[in-house]
Image 1: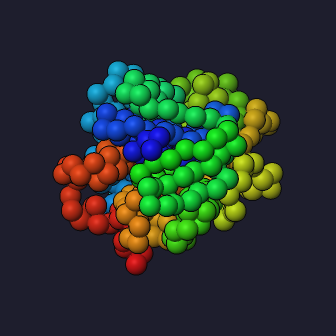
Image 2 (image 1 turned 60 degrees about the vertical axis):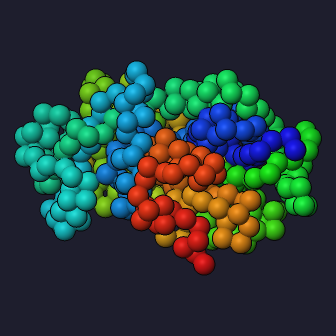
Length: 358
């Protein structure tokens, strides 16, 4: 065997799992693209907001907090603001209760973000429990740890065939074949395709496109201290980024796995929803892009051995929570694969297990 653990996918899920597993056995990571984190991981809004998502996702994100806080400069204070119109009172109330935000007055909101339009925005809430993640520091830190324990991280290694015999798995790529006792499926939008190649029943994951636009700082303002802003019901969001603002329509359009790009009409509609809430118009785009956020049927991550073949391990369905849940998710994966008692609750482990899909 070339390795005990062979991981398909070099995004944050696969690389973090490699770092956790490498001290316990030989690890090989296969990434199809020329660089790690080429797809969803490289197109993330990069926010640690642990109250974002369904209860199981929130618990996993909260479990990742100690790891983030243990690394210098990993987190930078950002804050979070939810905004709503007069006719969005119910959606606004739901969002702030779920995400633990405090209502603030419009004067207070405009003191934080001076371009808010008081003729339209009637509901505002704010919290400080959201931080920017240095995603490159996180990814490269995990990669460095994995390599320091002997892991091989191979790029340009697109998987073409997967076969199993009595000795384990054989995975063939454009650059060679590799064998391992355990196959870990961390292939992002392609997880069901990888499963099918391996003769494993797909679980029904759905990639969804999300588009982004980078615009100049509105009105020439210094946006560096502004929070991430959401339209209530997540109908759009905006976040400071390197002196500019990134704005997303927050769409979820089902797509087949591919190298995603932004849809011009969807971007225009999302920018219009953002513009309604502010006093500064969008006059030009600096750039735009899109990524695929891949969800399981119940929108919760899937972490665990396949119910029919325990030598096939799922690490999938990160959706929009991949970076903020990666420390907790990768530690759980390593614990389950090495027979170590997880620190997470039995209920959470069951909620994340692929066995829930029968």
